[in-house]
Image (cartoon, rainbow, N blue to C red; front, top):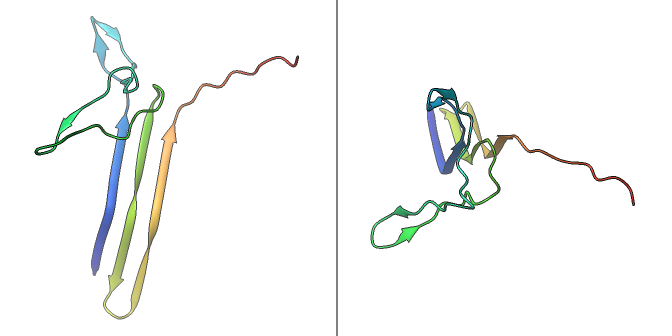
Length: 91
């Protein structure tokens, strides 16, 4: 069996635990507080700049092969998030 992956990424923004003895489900707000990561001579900011929300995302490309019997490849993109929507009354 041979498996390979390219352009794999994982984004997690989940809240949990306690803060000052109380349950805390607050997630990081990267729009208000950008995260800067030193990546060698250049400092970069991750692409997580959307509004504050719970997020679990995985994406990339995979290739799997079992000898010359079976080969498959493709891309995937999974996302699970929480988004609050509000309805406006009709004018």
